[in-house]
Length: 355
Ligand code: SD4
Image (tube, rainbow, N blue to C red; front, side, top):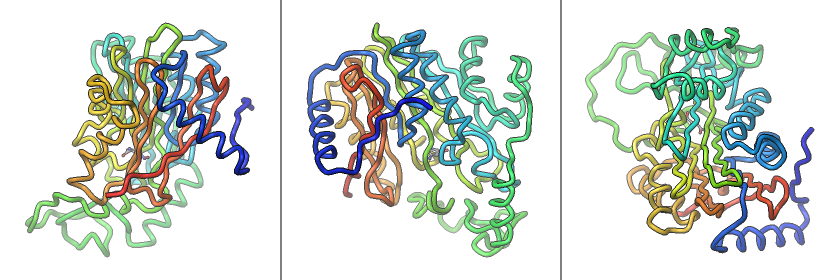
């Protein structure tokens, strides 16, 4: 068990935390290293912090080992094996790692039967000239790199899938098909698309409650080298073959040593159309503070998709952190930060933007 500090529900501490947070957000620089993680994945952030502060100190190792903790713990069942079964009942994984110095990216999309998606992504970065490998052929690559091929299903994920089948395959992500996808399972055939969907109303919630919590992480080592990473099993009941934002550079995460880094969580099908992580990094480059950069990235989405649900975490090259969210049912977005000032993992939260 890692030593993780989480604030007691006591008002004084909550006040102190907000004060620290605001001070931190408004300060012009912070000391390094720094790690920031989407959601409250304390053990994953603690592992990354341990690597940065006491281990190799390497940002790649911090991201890989931090995200791996979530893959092993099946964080919220939305990271790693045994979660988000697709329409065939299979769990597939998306993951990415990006180097803020070289802009090199390694990613796997819809990888099958391999648990350690983030580690395979790192192998893509380190042992190939490509950026993204997908599906069964990504599995083949992983096996060649020494990873074990095994089922990602669990009793729980099989039950989730059975319940969904027994509920006439509701909810699902189909549109303009016959038989009516709102009350029937497939197979489907296409019908004339009366109107091409542009606003994806309630798109994300179609996957049902709890369809969130991808891990996205950005780390800066003590020399200012930045690395970002993501790992997810995507959305519950996704159509097999679906790839979300997480393995797409600029969408799920983006990082540039000369500006900053960002990582996203939420409705990936919508987010990847706007490259919010890239947008946030570019806003930081133009001088916007990290929290504002996160807000700008989301505002670009919500003017078109007011039903959107998602969040962004940001960190400038100087180690100042920020975050923003929109549309989350809870009204706020928890995330983790570790810095030398805090000396450990701190859980923070930001209220979601109002439309
Ligand atoms: C996806 N963005 O695959 C991921 C899901 C997610 O928080 O982030 N959930 O669309």
